[in-house]
Image 1 (cartoon, rainbow, N blue to C red):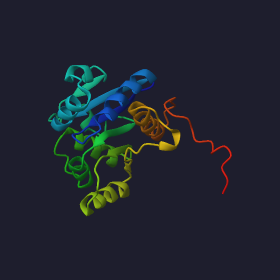
Image 2 (cartoon, helix red, strand yellow):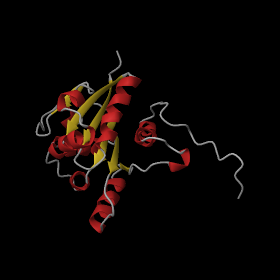
Image 3 (cartoon, one colour):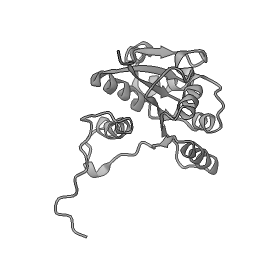
Image 4 (tube, rainbow, N blue to C red):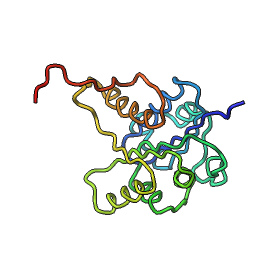
Length: 195
């Protein structure tokens, strides 16, 4: 019997909590995945402030939710096989913890496990403008095999809602894990464009 396909979703206190919430919704709709959620304390504040959702409603979107302080949770071990992890959004504090291998809470430990086990780690880093520490931490994570993926809107698709902008980015996130989706069309060129 094949092992269940598992994906870890982290949400931190950077603005953009909708990315993590909608990712959980899309993963549930896709089916065939067992999702593990871990949220920082500031992440819960951002979720409430930006989406109006209660904690229980967000936890219900995941198959399992782990407290941020539970460093003995299943996702803290490399022996617990997963496809990897997405942190959406990823604060600069969490980025720094991952870049320097702090493993000071379950979110940064799960990310560290993904890096050490050579599993996919995608960080939707949210900050602007960026200072040198941010850039260096992004470089460190990239050098370790992580993917830094700032959530930038594809305005050439002429989105008409925030959800369309968010979903385009999430489609690209799902592609990082080889997951098929219908969130955004693949670019096929600009009709009638000339050089």
